[in-house]
Length: 198
Image (cartoon, rainbow, N blue to C red; front, side, top):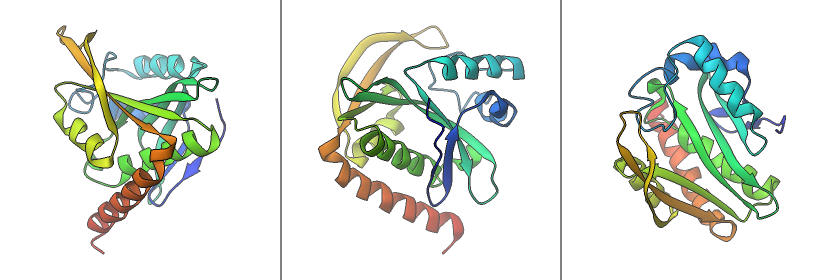
């Protein structure tokens, strides 16, 4: 796990720690925030500490807490996982944000910082994201950014309500990154303007 932090215009990604559990519990225990997450929703400080420990202990995962720059508060988390430096690939996931951040620049800039780290620092060739087949908002956002839909893993995992989920896979390659980076930069700037009224 890298000890590096990555700073953008509105957020800083800092290495995830169990010390972030108290700050992350309000968002992680929110059923609407957790709606599309495949892992059980933590409902207590002990449960989120255990979840964070499992994430941090995974050697193929780079986990980050998302810190909002204007007030230094921790407003979410995101990860690179299944990191394979030999094959040059990883996935982005385990991403959630406090509802107060929805519609703002924070998720877009977190993706910008993670993709940049993946392609420029780790030297990866491919980064993938997967989403629930019912999460149409996520699917539209990924296509809008320029990620390529690759296919669907049918009946891929069990949702928290016991139903079976299909997982849709999207990917971005290193040679496609410059165009997507420009789109993300523009999106962050636009959302920041709307959030600040400037």
